[in-house]
Length: 517
Ligand SMILES: CC(=O)SCCNC(=O)CCNC(=O)[C@H](O)C(C)(C)COP(=O)(O)OP(=O)(O)OC[C@H]1O[C@@H](n2cnc3c(N)ncnc32)[C@H](O)[C@@H]1OP(=O)(O)O
Ligand SMILES: CC(C)C(=O)C(=O)O
Ligand SMILES: [Mg+2]
Image 1: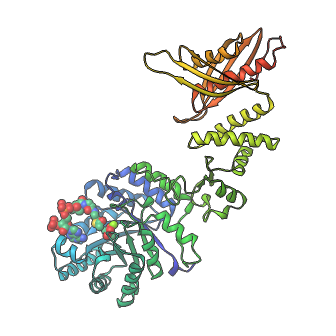
Image 2 (image 1 turned 180 degrees about the vertical axis):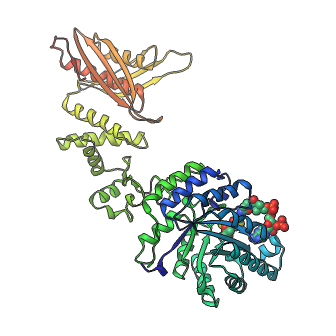
Image 3 (image 1 turned 90 degrees about the vertical axis):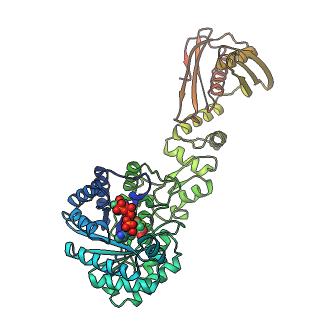
């Protein structure tokens, strides 16, 4: 890759990212993130706005003292005090940059700055020249360039380059531009400004219309060679272009962009997590690259495709951006192939197609009740399915209803299929489980003693399955029964019936023993 096609990644998580309401960071937090950005191999770290506060000055200085493998930049308005403060803050950096800006759109100049265009040009030139006396790497931004007059932009940028600016950054400050329009602006400016080739062209796009990444990439086609971006797209209002999206778009579509960055992409996810943890701004599950679902597949057709050939549904490798691997989520949209594959990974094998079908059917029933099926759920349902096929269940649960109300005695209403015939009974009890067991006993009339009742949640969360074990004794014979369900009273009834089935089957045996442990 020749240098002309190298894209400089300018990370402004610590400056524009910090401007997200609620995302303020302490000096120590900024240094931690800066270290992560260095591992990620960004080219420039904009560490803050030194004139904003003593704390931010110290943060920028601490980052400048710490970072060795990236340029450290401080932002300054176009006035002497801000520039001197920024120069002081970045002074310890191995490589430093002062970034100065002033707004150039008619509305900003007239209403906010209350300056004439001539005065704005004069301030820009003075600011760049003053900064250039403090540092030899100077970036100049005409703020709100996306809504500025191109002719005026040509004038002020040419003057800024003459005054010593080494990078010209064109911001779409309010995220107003469309990709074709923004690319056109960059091409127009680079074509018309006589000294354009004496500076690196940069873009800084906001995401108010969700176009920050698209606009940044469009600008690359017109010669922009620095992209300003933030981790997770953090930033003022709707945020900035997301670094992870820019970098992976360039890399994944190298066929279309003859450019690359020096980013160590496997550091993307750890950096994203660090920024999310420090700021408390968690990324949405479907966020590109770093969202928990970015490399997850739940629907059967996609899972089947990915299992056969990953590229059917993946354009990037999860490992390349820091995930361990892609992820198959088992849920109600999953199919047999993904189900069997995950079971095999867990060491669960089905000897017959019947066993697989029985387990898959139970899996679908459970998936209708539960958002996500975890490995522990699979273990439990596979065991149950195989046992159900191997052991003849002479009694099975057809319907169950229980009523538990404050101040009232719990009752249960059970319908069982006993040797092919439906039987129904209701009973009261000390609790819903006790009522369920009494109702079942009322039908089967077996003289059993309950030796043990235990319930465990198989996974965590309020929709987790409960796994119940009961131990029954009858005539010197002891058996265990298991049942699992998202409803623990139903899991209890299933476990009780499982144990009763075992006792009924082995009625002729008299030696004390424990079965099904
Ligand atoms: C598009 C961007 O992201 S720009 C960067 C935004 N970041 C920040 O604002 C960082 C945090 N800011 C701050 O801490 C404060 O606003 C400070 C310290 C910078 C300035 O605070 P104050 O001096 O109290 O001014 P205040 O914020 O009320 O108003 C901004 C002033 O700067 C002026 N100004 C705004 N941009 C520029 C500029 N690029 N160059 C020169 N002056 C500017 C405004 O016209 C206004 O001037 P006025 O006081 O004469 O009306
Ligand atoms: C300071 C500038 C570059 C900025 O953040 C913007 O215009 O959005
Ligand atoms: Mg900005």
